[in-house]
Image (cartoon, rainbow, N blue to C red; front, side, top):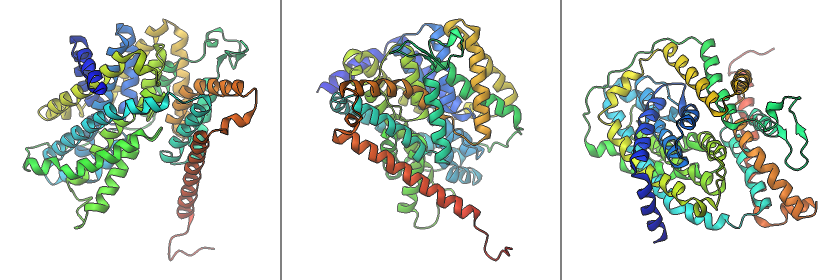
Length: 505
């Protein structure tokens, strides 16, 4: 009953004109962001953060806007995957496997409808899971001490390196670089400047928003300048020919939603893992006639439900534990920290309007996205024809103006550009930038909880493993990394092995 009362209070916050407008704008903009290849939800949310700050929106309205963009991008990623065979973001990759073949058969409208309905099912079920399970996790997390939080942060860093990194060594390197960046500034305990190189502007540390805009937006622009972009042929949408029962694909959508939600709750795993697991599981369970990969609607429904459910599940560890469940929730976490809001168990008690207003707005945003994406899919499809040389400069202008509006400092623009160049170099080396962002965000909490734990134990390091929960979390982190390195070693061995019937000297 407390959950229902809290949810009712959340709807009273969400249905205010300003918050309804933010949900609508975020849903519409998020669909466009997801549809355009190469932008993705992390970049879309990052672009809007400085704009939201410059507009002077309240923390509740800002979080509703950005979360609606997050949900909307999960919907929009299917459009380019189905019509162009180009995923709008990484979680939409699995949708290409059956969505594009359906489009080539003349079933583009059916594929888009299947993706929209399954996205609605996955997003709604994930929001219900967020409503039900987040308060229970808060009751459990209230007993977390510094040692438990430290172990949880270590697990988050190892999870994003073990589950989502192609090369776990490079992924861990990226996370370590993020931790180093997080130490820039004056030490809170000793008041000694660290890695400031005599630059007074760095005494307060590196602003999260400046770093992320540089790593995501500026870096993406530099990659665009290097690569050539050719206009892709968009398959016409046409009309729907399948029945509503076939379009809904209830069993596949429900199974994909469950698996995606579980993957989203795992710290650092994100929607990519959710869509992958949902597709693989559905294929092994249902592909009895070998139709998956050739335009099976269930191959579209499962990953779309999975990545949308993972998006909702990723909000649970962010709100209850202060640990981002994906790259986009890491950006949202940075926004909350910039507003002097500390996510964690006490957030539900101290700022219920923020938490429950967000949860209620996600229900509303899901309905808005369903209404927008079914009749307006033709408009979103036409947006795909926007030339990148028109789109990318507009993105850069927004980033520069938004970052400058945060502190009205030209140094922030220079720092953002530097992070963009640094991220570009890492991208050329095959290093993922998401673990670095996670390291920047968690570096401060890791250092703070480590010092608190050692202070409680009078400097005795054994306090970090004196309770069962930290030990379990450390062992889980170790096992995930071990499995990731073993799989990477085997993959490298297969790639270097000579092909059959090849003469070697």
